[in-house]
Length: 207
Length: 186
Ligand code: HEM
Ligand code: HEM
Image 1 (cartoon, rainbow over the protein chains, first blue to last red):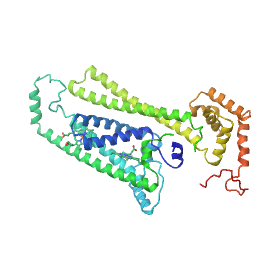
Image 2: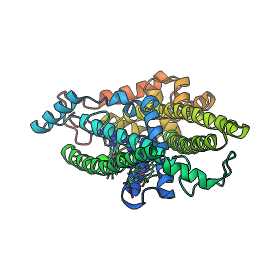
Image 3: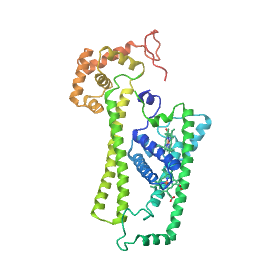
Image 4: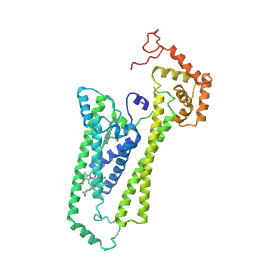
């Protein structure tokens, strides 16, 4: 099937930027959430890549083509309810972008990803975690041991760190739950509409 | 069925868009890397020329990403316009056009130009849609007219009007013609 016939049948193929950012983010979430241990250097690199892709997708939501822009899928509870009513009545409507429920899910996942990025960065850039001095020695004291001591004494900071860690870990699990719901939603809408939505996220296919 | 005419320009457009996408992704990754590096350096060494330079690079990368994104949207929109223009020629009349083009043995590029001409785009618009020079389009149109045995666009278009009048119109009672392709109900 060519892109044209897909479009003619109401099929939609997302532009390459939406597709690339989607799959890198999905990959990052699965890797960081299930496979790579939190705090590992690889976890942090993957986290940075995720932040880059998320930032890019959000920028694309402002300047991208019509159906990728936020205005094409505004977060609206009312629209979501009417979509649920459609489902119950067995009505199927084509949407030019995400359906209203899918849109809410996208915003929920993006919000969680932002929280993951912020808390992850905050933990990662904790001033001078032990063993990561970048080979740099404080000029005033020239004494690393003292720096570490000060750090340990700083009980309030430790507590803040713990809270960050809690939020970050909870967010990671929440993301995995949201992703599972997301998959179920994609499968459900694909069956209901008789059109495989995943294909639109993979590409126009070979002609 | 898509006309073979649906070829070059769009494949070129798609490649351009994919290339731009790769570039934007790379820029975004670099931007985040540089911002992270600047923040780490600021914390370690404070505001020194090296950090300032890196900060400038980071800003340039972010601005570059933004403009590259805008450029990419423009490319996507141009590609879609040309896709739509070509794709709309489907159904029975589309098949008839395709048949005619094949009969004149138009090359894929000529067929696409001819289709745009049929749809009423002028030379400059066709050039813009195909991303080609106006001179190229003029030459291609001249070859199309030559192959079709006409001298200008209105004669070219009327060839198809004739065909259309010969074809049983959908929805009108007409003598059944088993060979005439019928448009499916829409
Ligand atoms: C595991 C992590 C995943 C996350 C965090 C995630 C997140 C997202 C987000 C944020 C969107 C909105 C896309 C946009 O507008 O840019 C989206 C759309 C989509 N995702 Fe995922 N996704 C994940 C996994 C998957 C998987 C494994 C599949 C397929 C098997 C998938 C299929 C889709 C499809 C088809 C859409 C478009 C839905 C539509 O047509 O409206 N996703 N996803
Ligand atoms: C892509 C989404 C992400 C997911 C699903 C995720 C998931 C997790 C989980 C589940 C943990 C706890 C693991 C454990 O306690 O062993 C963790 C820890 C951690 N994550 Fe992430 N993470 C993500 C993004 C990030 C980012 C963007 C950064 C920073 C750039 C980051 C930095 C860290 C750090 C430093 C820890 C260690 C916390 C500690 O134990 O002190 N993560 N992450």
